Image (cartoon, rainbow, N blue to C red; front, side, top):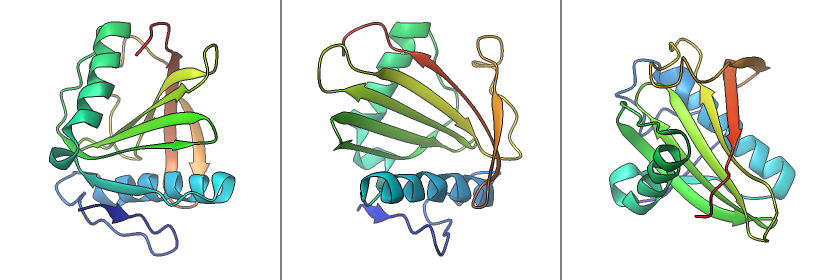
Length: 154
């Protein structure tokens, strides 16, 4: 069942098993606010087991592009199209959020982004490959993020 993420009244629904539940809920709300403000898009998520194709697509891109396999259990995922971009998100139990941005038009932007909820360590599978920049968020505290450009076609 899809859940509409509310960024004015942050909820931990669906994320309760995470050791950084509140921070991950803030991170999810931060993403919802961004899409509402920039694109007037309502950010909804579903339990990961209800949208396995989204989790599998993100996992496939990570594996094929950078030989990355995420050890944490996926809790929620979503996929949508906005302003010529296909977006996919997976929120993991560890506090990691991964998004895949894939332009509909050939030659457009294509990237994978990583965001770490405040209080989580950099996952072992990402630590040697990426440096993480910090940004502050009223909803999520300190978010650490990194990304890479997708080279293949998916």
